[in-house]
Image (cartoon, rainbow, N blue to C red; front, side):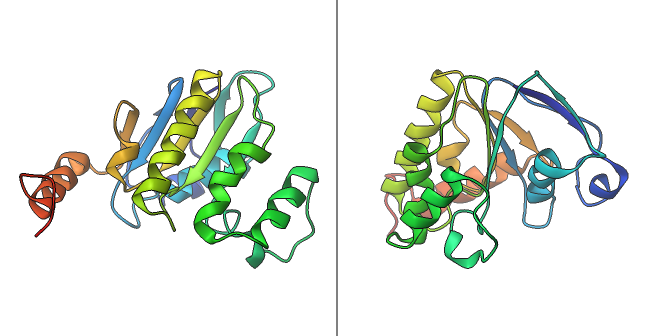
Amino acid sequence: MLNGLEMCVNHARRVKRKGPLFFTRGINVIVGPNGSGKSTILKALYSCDRCQNAMDIDVRLHYFNSVTMNPRTDESPALNMTNMALRLRAAFSSHGEILKAAFTTLPIQKGDCLLIDEPEAGQDLDGILKIREGLNALCEGGGQVIMASHHPVFWRDCNILELKKGYVATQLRKYREIIGSDGVGE
């Protein structure tokens, strides 16, 4: 499990929140306005040797962003059989179906951590709900999720890390105003 992150100077200057970040078991959601550093944090967790990750031994990280969720745009060689299988599925799937395919393709084991940048991209509400169910199942099996998301479906019953204080409350208030009191827009 990833327990925390203290960013190097290069990454820290691009994130609006100061100080170390702490993660819990289950689903951790990084929220904030565009440009606040959500993607930067995920990239730092996955690939920066200068950032200090506090993690258990043998944690495997799986990283998904807009490129890996649409591997047709990536012309680099497949790194392993899992990556090759996802690319093959991508040839016959929509952008929105790629992340859902990952749950049946990735060999996620207890203690693994899934890093996801905006899993709601390319998804309708049914797709978002299915992804959330998959994330819940992954965590029930001993996995961990750290994601950046703007979608309220992913915020419920999670460890939320706000990059701008009060962001979640403001967004939920705006969301309620849009959909109206009966839950349906006009």
